[in-house]
Image (cartoon, rainbow, N blue to C red):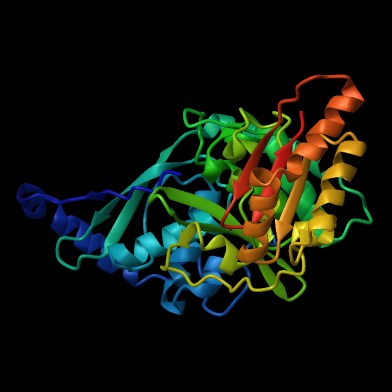
Length: 387
């Protein structure tokens, strides 16, 4: 995931001598006017009935610049002089927060230029880089809404919030290919329209669809254990919050070629806890994220794939039942590292899997059988691919 690069438009000496005085004068005059984009303590603004997590977390003195940036971006003001009086750090915090809360701003690129007053240091104007021309935005918006609604149409009206979230998670994994060279890959259209993206596109598409259903979903940025930038989501179900990383749920991270490759989806990253996610993910700290501690919606527990301890007969029956049911793969999650290690040893080193493989050969009349497997030490997970 690309981090937003936010270059300053630095004033040289010549500019300070010729143009900066004019900018300062403008800033002073504007400062005398009420900001038409903001009313303190009021909720008059139209923000699509989205629960804006970042707005609610940033310091209250940034509410004005957040609201102004939101309204200007919404109204396609790709460059403008500002009413709010803020430092560059305050501008960046508010700007990033607006984009994190609003994936529907699909035309905003990765860069923005700002101008600062040479006397006060306050930001007086901005200029966005954009990826979609103004003339094409309404058509793109309609296409995005239609794509999101196509996903939502497949969800049962009786579905619980968890079932809705799970459906969108699986849907995006099925329709999106992970591709570093994908078009507009920091924005929602890369996943929903072009079906090729990176983590930012996956996460923004997930957030966009959930917002369209009226569900809480926020965007999280950070790094992975290898040091690369990454983005994922946090959802809320009832009173609890859960991490969701659609990108890492894609089987490409388990060795599959692309979305829909037939490999098992990775459900480790569907409604998981901080304890599990933070083994590989490190969130940024600029904005405090809600704690994700509840594991009652763990996919493996909900679907009978969870083994609190290692029991030889239990695992033997699990393997044989998977073969008997003609499953493509068998998944087992264990409740502790000790149970997981014991299972790995018995299955792969002590020959437990050979009984299942022998049975496969008998069923299909084969003299040999090739299978593969994946082990995830961080999540105590074993996945065996029979086919």
